[in-house]
Length: 300
Image (cartoon, rainbow, N blue to C red; front, side):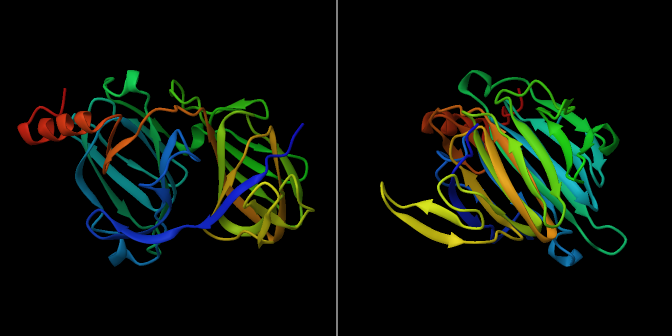
């Protein structure tokens, strides 16, 4: 067994999307080498309705999958194919945009005005970018939750973990998407597929992810063949941890425990051409997508 070295740690940055929704972006619209097949992760957490109620009005998607995971509040959604519904606390929607869809998402807070959720974008390989759109709407009660003897709790949204299989299936990148809580003071080692890119996103509590080359309680980033630069001893709220290769990670929870998303997937290793929520392989394909959008032929 080999512990995955910590490759990079960063903080989600405040940004604004949609019609004025204030959120934090862990990664996105940049170099995808470290996160492939994942393109973007947004943390839309807000206690002020005026900062999120205008939502994400009608916008196009092509060539990607969007994964929306709601922790509090609700997200009402509708699309150009006539689908509509509402995601509540604990629910997940895995939307394969494929050849193209127009979509809107309108967040609503809980009775106290709180809204919290995540949206993750996963790339599609060139062979599936023009596939038919598909939805998987998963209710909270359908997501298996596993509790270990030490109190560690794992919600298995996608993939196999500790003998349970998440309800989302048929995804090109064969991802694993876990919501993990490790109780205060506990140290936990968790298996991760060796040759898949993996990241952790901390959103409650704090803790330390062990680097293979450092003593516990210290995280390092490789700056060169013989260089090690101390980053920090604790990762906390809105911290993104990118891992190198290996088949397990080890986390030491802080005084309040630690809750994080642990996501991994098989790299696609294809060129990425961006135009907002339209992601193709070449600029020519992007130009065609924009022409389709402007010409009324975007929906196939």
